[in-house]
Length: 267
Image 1: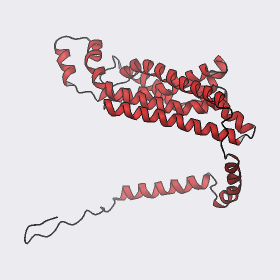
Image 2 (image 1 turned 60 degrees about the vertical axis):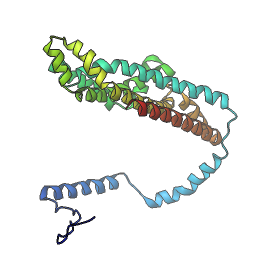
Image 3 (image 1 turned 180 degrees about the vertical axis):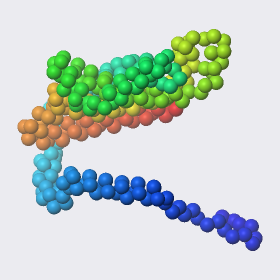
Image 4 (image 1 turned 120 degrees about the vertical axis):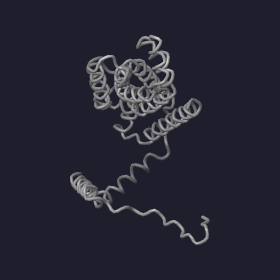
């Protein structure tokens, strides 16, 4: 970097001396980290003792056995259908919830806090718990999985839809208010179109998340490829299990790639 004659070059930035509260926070955080590691019984010796067993299982997974490719493909397709159906239902239900959960758009504070609570509750309960609940209530199969994915995605989409709505510029909304437009008209004509690109991107992220989650739901009987994977592992058919894992990996890679291409076009 050039400097004028007689002037000293600028010194590189340095870390500022931490204040006392910041230093206390750093020490407290380090203490929590040490306490957490101690509480979960991390042991390098136990890990080292388990390495031979890991190597044995991985060795039995090679080469992958695709003899049941037809069954695997059918369950993989069912998994994708569950993810798509659950995400679409969640997006449709999240739109009104997000409007009520957005500051400045909710018609009443009570409705705002209630909508926020619904979104937080859906996001708090793990997908496996939702799956168990719906398996008990509606029975085994992909329908329970769709409902579980829908509830989880409502928590995801509702939050990010509401944030996208809150970030919309106020100018066009004030213009419509000045000419006497209704609250619903303002939301439909200005707020939702402005927030649409961000909402589409969030929906695609929700679909990616649903595809990954739908694999796990089969462990509790909620349909999808997880049933095949659980059966293979329980029967010690590790070569079949590795084939299923590779098939799942390929599906997720394709979905994430297509989702990234769509987001690149709309953002």
